[in-house]
Image (cartoon, rainbow, N blue to C red; front, side, top):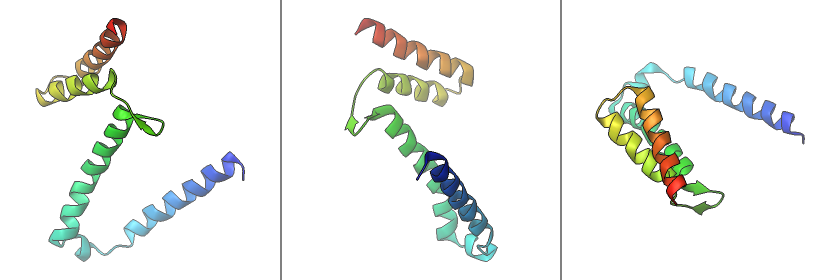
Length: 101
């Protein structure tokens, strides 16, 4: 199985899943439990993605310059600082820590 075949199969699977989502009746999604799950699932998936990208290195958990950079970014986002400033501050934090250690 080539890489392109895997990409095509994964793309078709994603497209099928998206089309299946349109087939769910609206009355089901308006119930409290599915609506709450749908609202919180996106946040949970994004938090998991950030955690994996921040702490993961292969199959290990690593604490390096990425963790303080994400902490600085989270703090600045909580303070509603413009996004470009958040990105620059987080990158500068990671660069500074890597330069020092």
